[in-house]
Image (cartoon, rainbow, N blue to C red):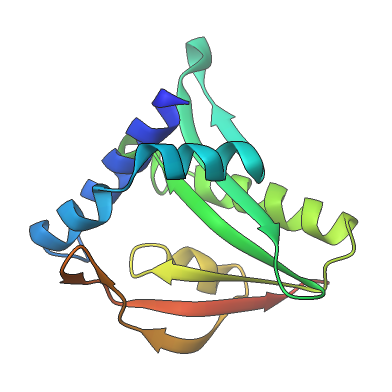
Length: 145
């Protein structure tokens, strides 16, 4: 679990779409809360040589027939190498097999290009404030095949 939290923080701190202050506020999440999200939701991990954690994703049931992608983070050393896409594919496949019709998420500026390339559309731009810092993001959704 600790490796997952470290990976998420490192990924956040590498998200250059945000200022240093924004990244620090984002990465100051509560370990217990995030640990619970990873263990209580449907979670996936991507592993490399010597079982090194390369990325994590978690999702849960949303409203009615919609799945909710909660977390998707990739180690900064493995970004743009297909790890995020592979994790997203696992989440989408599982959600589809379980009967979900759509999948939605609140996507950081850093995640949005991957999601757009995978067929997600932006439904609404959002500006949540996290620990005093506004973090622009988008509510995005994809209709599953």
